[in-house]
Length: 287
View 1 (spheres, rainbow, N blue to C red):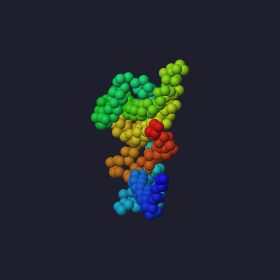
View 2 (tube, rainbow, N blue to C red):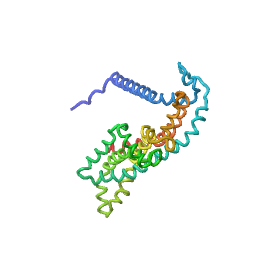
View 3 (tube, rainbow, N blue to C red):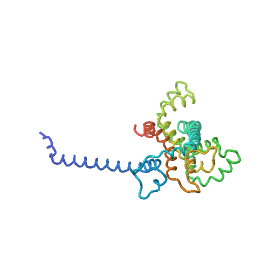
View 4 (tube, rainbow, N blue to C red):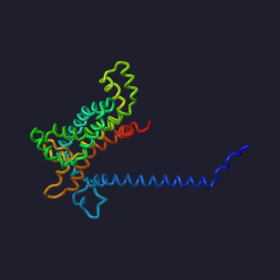
């Protein structure tokens, strides 16, 4: 007759429990420290936006000050046209990248050829070249096509920038859809178009939301192409911020106010869509 194993000593269980509590406390502390490190530049920028220029340049820094709204009053007149350009360029390029990228991702995921992987690798390789290496031919092409300092030109530029991202991410999401669903649809007489609009797109909605959010953020934050391909008529917010560095000097308080107005829309949008972003980025990770 076998005997039941003796229970672990009470002191041993208490030691293990104490170690778990200590480890959790350390992980929590590290998490708060990292979060504070990432948020500190935003908080500092937000504080500087409400200071005067003298307070923004003060050494040591001034933490007790009377909030000043003059910096926002100076920035808003030029902010609104730049905001309109950024919204049109970001939304238009994201929509165009999806129109072109979704059918490509579907074809490469559901009906791949023997060169499908090569096509995906080639599309990804277009992101390897530094932007400064292609700006001269792009500038000449845009000049000849009369696309310099125009919103269609900016939309086209952002579309080519985000198209590989759309194809790669949506390809990975669509490959997670069981192929048996497509086979069942074919048995019922579904066409390729019906498979695309009736199966692939509805089942890839979380991935589409995450991809769209990333495309919007990348287009919103892009500086190099916007700075070199636009001047005033189609200048987005990333170019608008640079206007506060003039020959008279760098106006830190006004620059902070402009930067706060620039990052505020995308921060709000990212906060609202964080559930869709997390769900889309983890789509297919757990089966």
